[in-house]
Length: 267
Length: 290
Image (cartoon, rainbow over all chains, first blue to last red; front, top):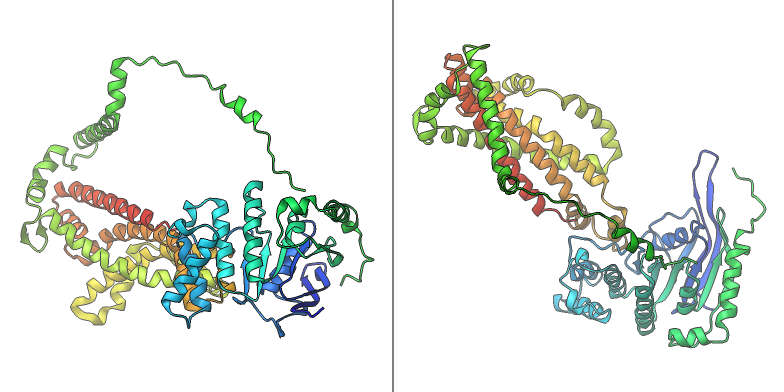
């Protein structure tokens, strides 16, 4: 497999009174171009730490990340980030929230072109009529839509999703998963998502990477999800592999995630 | 995994139990409730005026009673824009002079205080370096600052008293702006800063598009508190510099042993301060971005 994005020996430690606390240790992962990979694990296992290191929001202690042939250093708009809370700027309208990124990335484009990009992505997620509304006037789900539109509008090399649907009710979550899948299919952006929802992981991903519990979290198991695309929820759930895969994931989370490696010298 | 279904039956049954209060409204009580917003303050005012009468008749014989005060204040109130002399003007004229001085000093406080608050909010080093100084200077009274201002601007000749007054107003009024702005900057949600980081906004854009809008509500709270203090300081500043204005007038009349207008000045200062505060809270609400 030719890696488009490669995380090698990614390690994160924080200083603590009892010597450095190792959150993630020697985390290795290769993503092919256009692949959708999900990191799954218990809360606090370090999966979000991995994601925020890829986003450049968290410094890397050791190891590195290569994206499209270049080692990453710091954050940048080449990685579109969708946060768990939509993180919209509340004093800007939905349109302005999308535009602020577009202005930054496509500064060479004409005003007209930039406007069209924003308008296009907001309409794709069904917010054509709500462009001039501020986040407080939008529902939780609509806000996350704006967050997703903002990420896609930048035509990033990679999409990073940090439990993007974690704060939504299940109906809205299903709806948004569908929209995300559709957008992703049209754009084929390499995506890395963090979740602890097993069904969400299976529905969206090509591969699910199970992480062991921290400290010193690492890759525990990798599950290939080969449901045909384009997917729809009903077909996926009726696929003969669905329940075996689901069982395997849950079993991992219930049993193997807690497996502790022999303690390294901690200081 | 996570269970998103929440039992809703409990909440439904809990609501219905609230008993309806027994109502026994006599028609009088209703009428009273309708006008209590007007009646109760009037009762309060009447009580204070009564106390004032009593005081002036018993304990402090030099205090002019309300009727004398009103008689002596009438020319200043009924001809609020008259100018009979530098320190003998209608009350609105005095108020206007005071307001101009306060506006100047207040603007200086904001111009200095807001950036200083931002610097303190952004930099832990600066906070550590400056916080002790601020904490020590903050409680210093305007009466103490004014002589220092006079010394500072001695070289300015005839302008000295105005500059000293402005200096005093500015330095006393700026602390709430400095401190609340700093608090506001520290309280900017990490989410917003992450957005700026991920989009790689320039420092200037991060400041103007993210940090300042996120801090605005705090800044305006500071601005409102600062205006209150600036107005509070005006009396001290005018007293000591002898400048015409509400405070200067008050002090001059006291020194001339004319006590009748002291209460007039106090009430004017109070009413103006109240109006300024109301105006500022309207502005403050307008800038609630979050």
